[in-house]
Amino acid sequence: MAQILDGRLVAKELKARLRQRVEELRARGVAPTLVLVRVGEDPASGVYLRAKGKACKAVGIESRLVHFPEDVSGDTLRAEVRDLCREAAVHGVVVQLPLPAHIDEDEIIATLDPAKDVDGFHPHNLGLLCLGSPRFVPATPLGILRILDYYDIDLDGRPVVVVGRSRIVGRPLANLLSAKRTPGNATVTLCHSRTRNLGDVTRGAEILIVAAGQKGLISAEMVSPEAVVIDVGMHREPDPDRPGKERLCGDVDFAALADRVRAITPVPGGVGPMTVACLLENTVVAAESGPPGPRHQE
Ligand code: NAD
Image (cartoon, helix red, strand yellow):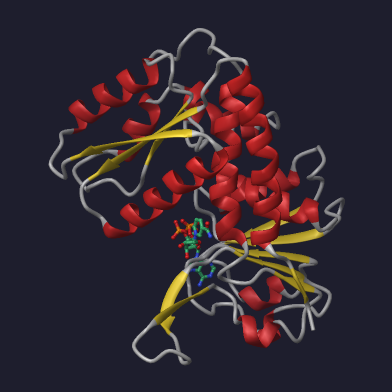
């Protein structure tokens, strides 16, 4: 049976340390503050934002939800986001994606002050990450690094396969894991929807990280028995044990792999809890960094 890499446990310990750091900040008169920007009524965004707000509260971070109507113009949203970033008492601003189709997400993200972009999606922050000196690492890749570190999974020189090249997970992760630093120094292959013979590539991985958004994409014959498997995928499916209810599952056939591989993250309880915890970590880092330097100008 594979070792279960317990993201809930790692997140719990991380949040306990963050609570301590927040107390130290408050003792210095700094109340770490995160603004969550929502546009429209996308139900999944509502769920994620509620979870983020609740997690903030649990570690003592102030959070404020700023909700715009579905038909807000891109110009208005940009102006509002810029104003929020200018508030001295605000340390982090998160714009919940996806935005409605009439708004250019890249333009909105580029409006953020990079010093308050705790999601790490601003081109400036992604550029720093690519250069090997990240400021804010996007929360999901950071959470995966923290899980690997917690369980002492050695990356140095190892063959790592990342499936999925999204800007928020696969691409930054491949960059971080291959960087000349610790954790890093891995030999990384980045797979995507055009990769041929995916199983031939994934079987060569000592560490396999799957963020493809395809339920059950990775079957038992696609992995080495020595592999450590990190499943980022998040999907809903009917729960066979609770008729009429749903449960979460990932991009990996967990039941089949759990008997076969060296270690694996479950869904739920793997990467998901770490994503939220690492957003909190970035917010605490932003608050600890003190008043930002010269502001980013558009
Ligand atoms: P995305 O949908 O933006 O991109 C998916 C990537 O996977 C693309 O680069 C695509 O080329 C690749 N891909 C798709 N099908 C493939 C296939 N058959 N073979 C190889 N590559 C394939 O993805 P995302 O935003 O990174 O999200 C991926 C998954 O992770 C989703 O299920 C999402 O819900 C989940 N997710 C979970 C968390 C978390 O906290 N647990 C955070 C972010 C995303």
